[in-house]
Image (tube, rainbow, N blue to C red; front, side, top):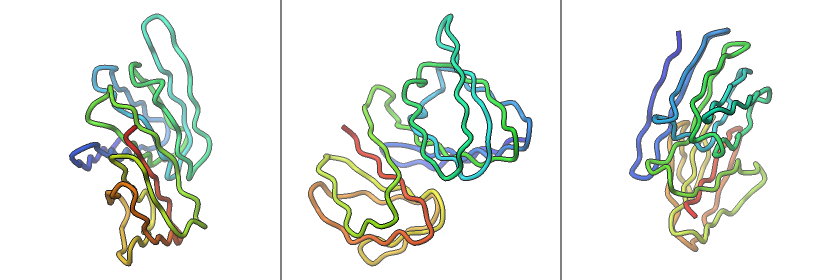
Length: 162
């Protein structure tokens, strides 16, 4: 059985998919908004269909953020080789252009020059500006402002609306 949980914000939403070994997932292109996927644990494969073309995407690395923007107009069929937890970053407006990355654990100051930027905690918790941010929570950044940050044993994504 696959479990899906969605966390909503004004600019994006986060979906958490917990799937058992060898289960099949499907998402039609009409409903597909995923730009980035973080693999907490697990391994698997997606087959992405765009009209008459099909392309496979295999995720074999855990603790990694995958850029899936080129598949947003594709229907997806996938399966996991082992039990998996996958967290996806999805903008509300698919026509928007977002940049995303995992932050390096050694970073001490974070800043964005974009009009909208946020940090999402995928695992553990991190501290920004003296406040702890737990798993599946986010913080917005003010354009041009520097923030002290401590990324302990956690994985944090930074997403900027371009």
